[in-house]
Amino acid sequence: MLFPGFERVWTPVLPSRRLKHSPVGIRLAGEKIVLFRGKDGAIGALVDRCPHRGVELSLGKVGEDGCLACPFHGWRFGADGTARLVPLNPDAKLERLGATALPVREIGELLWIYTAAESPPAEPVAPEALVEPGWRRTYLEVTWNCHWTRAMENMLDTPHLPFVHRSTIGRQLARIMTPSSRLEIDWEEMPWGGRQHARMDGKGELAWLDFHRPNMMALHIPIPGRRFRMHALVLPVDDRTTRLIVASARDFLTLPLLDPIFNKMNAIVAGQDQAVVESSDPVEVPVAGEEVSVATDRATLHFRKYYLSELRDGR
Ligand code: FES
Ligand SMILES: [Fe+2]
Image (cartoon, rainbow, N blue to C red; front, top):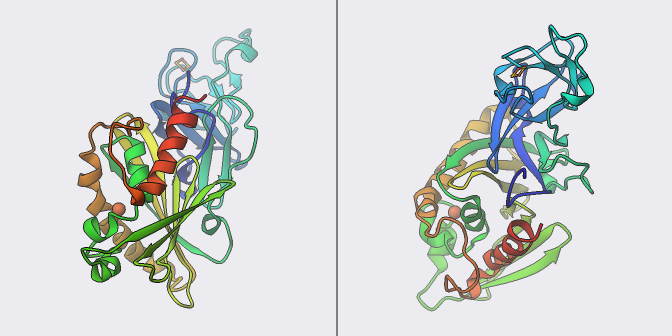
C-alpha cells in the first residue's frame, strides 16, 4: 500500500522553481518519489523505485526526449510512467514494464501530488493567496524531527502564541494577556476544512486562521491597508520526520530582494516552535482521552478528529 495514513489526498510537495533540469527525489509519507520535468514542460511524478531492479530513478537523468532514464540499465520512462525504451532488448513488452506514476499538478508556484496511483476524484484546492495574482510569495523549507500531526496541530494552535512566540508573532497577545484572561476560539466549517477566529477577553478579532485539509494552514495577519498571509504546508516524510514549507504572501514591499527578510522572520518563528513540538510524547497525536484538553484546543481537536477518523483509520 502506498502512503499508509496519508492516502488519497492532494498535497503540495515542492516549490516548482526547485525543479529544473535534474530530477528531484523527495520522501512523502514513507514513500520515495521522483519528480522531473521534460523539455515540453510536462511534469512526471513516479515512485522512485525502478520497476526493473528497484534502484532510485532520481539518480538518473532527463533526456532530450523528456524521458527519465534509469541510472542502472538505462530504461527510459515518460512523465506518465510508461516505459518508452528498454536498451538491448528490442523485443521487450514495454506496456508491462512501466513505473508507478502519481497524479501531479503545478498550481501557483507549487507542485502537488495525489497520494494514490489512480485518477483523483477532484482537483486540489489551494489557499487563495498561494494561487491568486497580485501576491509576492516566499518559500522556506525546514525539517523537524516529529510526526507531521504534531507539527500540523502546532500550526493551528493559537494559545501557544504568547508563550512560545512571546518575542515575535505572540508579542501582542502576551502584552494584553492577564492571569484571568479568556481566549475564545470560534470554528467555522468550510468546504475545504475550517476557519478559526480568536478573541482575547472579548476584545476585537486578532486574526483568522484556516485549516485546509489535509495538511495546510493559512494565517491572515491583520495590517491596516495591507494583505499579509502566512502558510504552513506540513509534509509527512516518515513517522519521525516532517518537512515544512513555510510560505508567506504579501501585497506590499513586493521587491524580490526583500524576500530573504521575510524568510528570515519565518525561520525565527519556526525555530521557536521546533524543540517544543519535537518533544511531543507520544510521537503521533493520540486518540481521544489520552491527553486532556480545554476550550482553547478547539481547532486542534477538529484536526485531530479529521486525522484519526478520515485519514489514518478511515480509508
Ligand atoms: S534497475 Fe532501472 S533499468 Fe535496471
Ligand atoms: Fe508556533
